[in-house]
Image 1 (cartoon, helix red, strand yellow):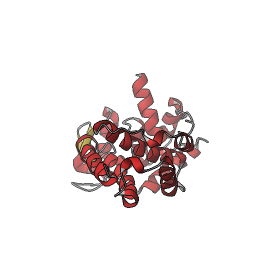
Image 2 (cartoon, one colour):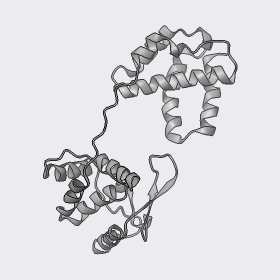
Image 3 (cartoon, rainbow, N blue to C red):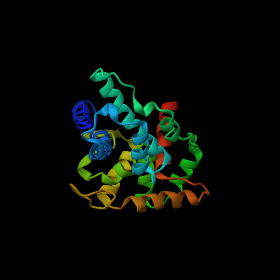
Image 4 (cartoon, rainbow, N blue to C red):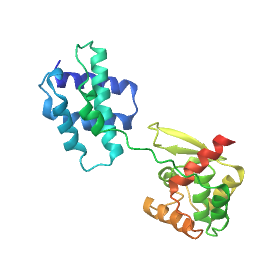
Length: 237
C-alpha cells in the first residue's frame, strides 16, 4: 500500500468518526507527509525519515504541539496497520521518535480561591466588565464563546453558543438567575438588539480586562482561569 492510498483511507475514517477541528488538524499534517512520501510504500518509510519529517514540521513549535503531531502520525500508522492487517511494525514506536517527542511534564494548574473570584466580581463597578467575569466564573464560558454571544442567543436563563470549541454546531450554557437578570438589564439599558453582539470587544481587550482586574488584588489571572474555576467548583458541588 502506498502512502497516498493509506492517507486517503485514513481521511475517510476521520470524516466518519471525528469532529471538524480534529479532521483539520490531522489533514494539515498528513497532506505535508503525503507531499513527500506519496508514491512510497508505507512500509518502506524508515523511522529516520519520519523523525526528520517531524523535526522539519515542528522545530519552532511548543513541546506539547510537537508531541501532538508525533501522536497523530503514530495513530495514522496504527489505524492502517490494524485495518489493513499489514505485516509491519509501527515505525513511530522507534526509541529515536518516542524519546524525541515525549510528552512534556504536566504542571498542575492552580485553581483560584472562591474568595478571590468573588472579590474580583464585587469590586468591579462597570456593568459590562462584571458580566464578563460572572459569565466566565459562574457559567464556565470560554472567552471566545462569550464574545460571540448575540442578543438572539439569550433566552431566559439559557445562552446558545455558536460554533463552540467542541466542534458541534451549537451548545447551551445555563446562567444563575441573578446573572441572567443582570444580563437582560444590560441588554435593555444598552438598547442592544437582534443579531448585535452583546460584548463587541476583541479577545485581547477581554484578556487585558481580566488580568487588570486580577492585578488590583495582586493576583495573576487569565480568562481561562475563571473557566477552570467554574468547572472545578461545579464538580465539587
